[in-house]
Structure formats: C-alpha cells, structure tokens
Length: 64
Image (cartoon, rainbow, N blue to C red; front, top):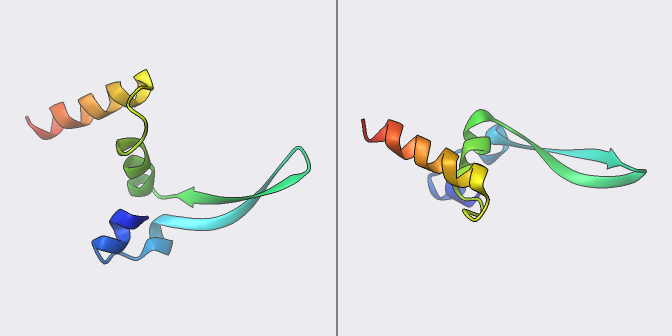
C-alpha cells in the first residue's frame, strides 16, 4: 500500500477492503489486484522458498 501511495496511485484500485468470516470470526481483509498481489510477494519474507523462487524468476525475466 505504501508503494502505491508513494507512486501516487489509487490504493483502493489495487487493495479493496472487505471482511471475511473464518470460524465465526470476522476478519478485516483485502481483495488484491494482480499488481497488489505481486507487490505483496515481492516484499514478502524471503526465507520462504516460494517467495524466494518467485522473486528470482521476476528478476530473471526483467533482466532478459
């Protein structure tokens, strides 16, 4: 969200607030655009192998 704000993008276009119910508990959540989903993964914990592999793939594709 901070990236979108800094880049003067419309945050609610990419991070749509909504509520989800899990086991009877109401949770504040977001529906993410493809860009938002990518930004979340790009800034996720790199100790997670899936995150690390995805970040490497993005960079390799970008640098082609």
